[in-house]
Image 1 (cartoon, one colour):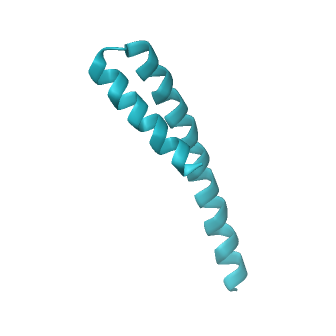
Image 2 (cartoon, helix red, strand yellow):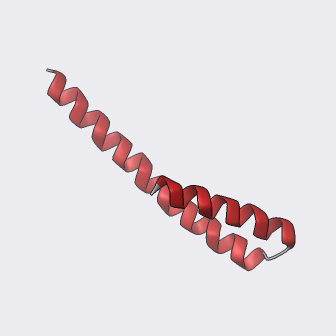
Length: 54
């Protein structure tokens, strides 16, 4: 999943540099969704890790 986030980021940067703003905007939206997903997974993992420690 993190691989896809990196790929979409690179696509967004290249598309932005070449002037394809529609493609860049679409890639940025996908990156935002993946970022929120990874943050949520991090928080869940953190909470579960803290509960197991006790």
